Image (cartoon, rainbow, N blue to C red; front, side, top):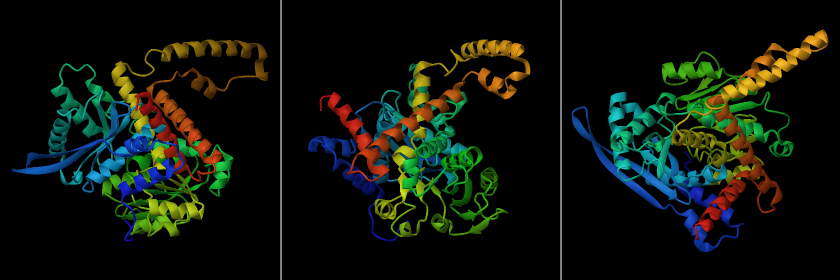
Length: 476
């Protein structure tokens, strides 16, 4: 974190909001209504652990109820505080609006280091936290729907869903009270990879527009681009894995909490991930150059920098030294407002967090819809689609018989064409479509308005415009 005076995370969000509304024609009262956080609930509860009662502090903020339910993750971290949770809730409002997920913004957090507790203890803590929120309708399928965030995952969401179900035994839609659940507990395929996959789709869409690629001082496609990833958690891992395995990128550096690895020829993301799972960090990994102060690798020369862990890692102290031509914010708020100013003046293009990490809430939306409809995606139409495709293949094979060696279908084409879309394919398709359309809306504002000079400002304008329209429809 920066040692120089700069805005807090919450102040950064407000500053970026103010930059956007300064060029919009919003009534002052409505501008304030959109900006402020509606409510924050603070809960302190005790759990008997290790022979004594331990007290924990948790939060659930609701930023905007222009649409309901409100949506937002629950994070477990010692850094959780009211300001952070309220800033994240505001980002969720704008993020949902940008990708047209029909939710207001919310966020939750528990001030805890989950690594200090075993699984049983974490379950007791999570269930009590869920109880405290659910009894106040701060967990509810039609009012407030949490999801995983930093320090939480499928396991914690399954506990929360079960706790809600125990408290609401006749609620047929109980599974929709939370998203990010395991597939065997009402989750949806593709949710675990969703945020990282969304980062990949965002970059793919960016590189479809030569004008935008040129603005970042780059050329060509993603193939061969040098990528530095900060944080190999769920988001960073999937983003790095997909970009390296499917798009031909070279992951030249990986930064973790215990240090950083660098190899200009490219690191094996899967091998590094397995090493971290076994040893708790990157120290000792047999390939690449290791340094204890991994943050120094943020300043390495690269094409794409992917901060995918904590907020504020690019700040006033290191922004001037950042050499990346393109930064995509896979985490929430990794670039401070002060650093954002410096980077924009240097000509660095930043794909903002509001858009870049929206894959998680997009697929959470799909999971929520699945839970409310009580049917798996693809169940009704997959085999009919395959049967219809089989008719086409049969006709092509009949032509193949008459044309002989002049033309024939490849076995690979036949296999792919005949396969109907299942849940995972449909989820990925929906996510790809969402990321494409949202980016196109941002870039249109970016390129067509003289008073907008970056994608972050464009994303805020696009999102605030949609929130404004929703409030006006309510009569405000």
